[in-house]
Length: 135
Image (tube, rainbow, N blue to C red; front, side):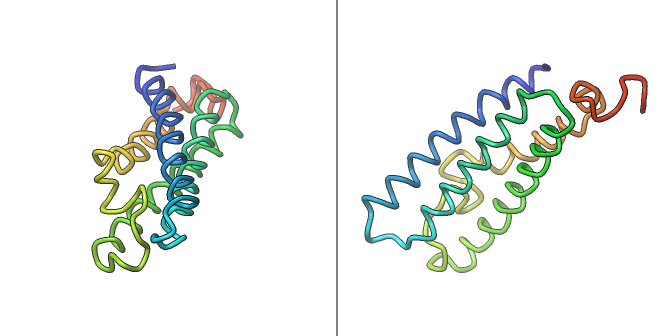
């Protein structure tokens, strides 16, 4: 696994833990918040967990699962980030609000870096998606 693969493999479980804990706390202990916000945070933590498992399992199926999870994540961050700015009361405050500003924009950059890494030819070869001598 390359250096970026290790960074992603470590950061995704940590982000899953932090966003999951935040969502669970908000869902059960913050009755003043709309329920959609913590539900979206919990959903994002599950995506992070799925992606992390896919990074460490080396198979074409794991690669496809990770690409799908990161694609959903990237679209989600962009959609929720945009909605949180245009209509802040609509969703409440989620892990992806304001393009994940609370997390140093890392959840905005992370799926893009992850997709770039997963689509990189040596990574696809390592996952068995292409043969090592294919272009």
